[in-house]
Length: 153
Image (tube, rainbow, N blue to C red; front, side):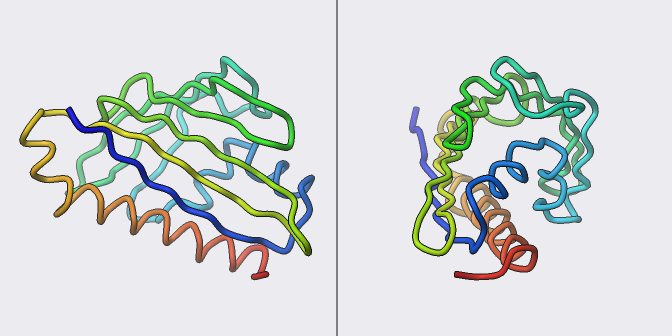
């Protein structure tokens, strides 16, 4: 079964401290998720991010179908990176690495998502026509939302 990778980078004119404060607060995920996805955190976002943290939420990614998604924050290195992994949800595998790196005038935000789809060959068939474009759309929304919140570099 194929493992796909989504890789995005964005530069923001904020400090590492500001970036970490925003991205390590699970409640801010709703802010950078498109409204049509009806993102709603059920539990686990009541404190700053830590290794072992379980976050449960409901999301409506496609066709109005509500999906429960459970992630675990598996790795955290303060002000450098964290990793979230799906424990239950729509993917066979979801491993999302978030990196924050200081650069001249701000920070570089880097996302690397490795994911595997369910349904074997059928999942591979729908990937280029449904899943990949939807993920690109979501991460492009995040890019624009972060620019609106913090500006561009």
